[in-house]
Image (tube, rainbow, N blue to C red; front, side, top):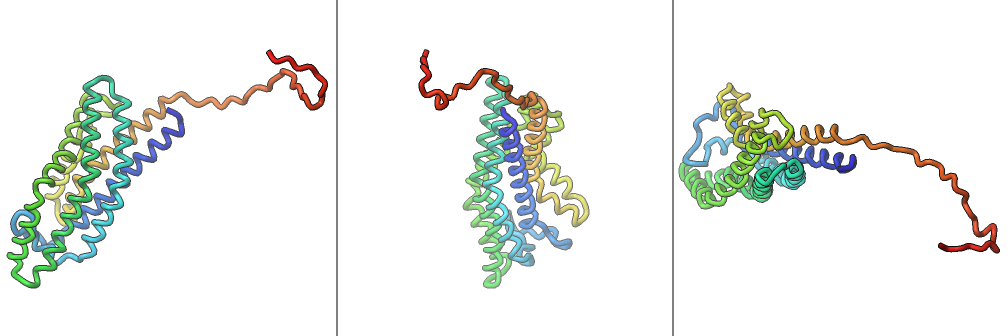
Length: 262
């Protein structure tokens, strides 16, 4: 790999990290609650706290995810190449392929799932003035349940597959990173986020960014590996070409010279 290719690799991984940060901000905008909004859920999904939130939060959250998805694809495609290049055997290549499956599923799923999630509060806010809050919550929950199958399948294909493949890759030492990187995946980060959710408000609101933070940690692992790989690359020798001592024959100066082509 050339120095220019390595520079491009690090740039792509940084773009993937930017995508994860955008998703973290989008998740916080969508889900963060005020200090008094506790135990306000009504059924499986609907939340009474949605009625007191500003609509701009859901709209901006949606825009952030729309901007993040292309960057996510660039970054995680590069991460797949990093993993694939470090694969030592067939088993490593299988986990690299699983990683790619999870990455592609995430690229397709994030917009679908997030648009659905941020539209539910907007729907509930629009219909609540015409009925009881409980009835509005029931309608919102029913709409979400109609989409539960693709949501669950995409969650498994994205977060579960990415987590399993990343943990296997780190455990098998396929990448030159410390085994603390076993925590660098969406599910482990989400669990840690839930633990942080027990902190006092407002620090507990960071828990909503847990899953997206797992994707950020994967990109950080990729950047660390890329930096280590760059250090292992042989230094490019910029050697000045030596002057050619052979005489230069200018045929224009000697039009009558006999030129023999061998």
